[in-house]
Image (cartoon, rainbow, N blue to C red; front, side):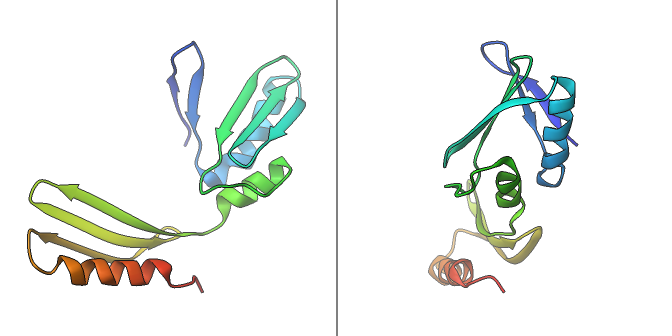
Length: 130
């Protein structure tokens, strides 16, 4: 489900789940009379509609090598391995996620085992995805 909030300057920010991104662009084009232009850089995708409306998206996990909107959607949908870190007063959690699954996680409080935990998380994060 998309989430919308107002931004400074009068625009709207819309958070769109990756699986819904292609459909969101299709609906944007239908609401605004079609797509008049697309500007794609390694860090930003900007779509301009026929009525002048603009939709801009920062490229996650950039840089983007694609040169069209379909390539951007494919880039966003690509499964990735990412490291997760949560630090709170007196405690921490570390993990590694692949796609939508957390494949390794550890939680602890202040202790001498931090180095071992860090070593395991780093080793899992740099291992190639299957």
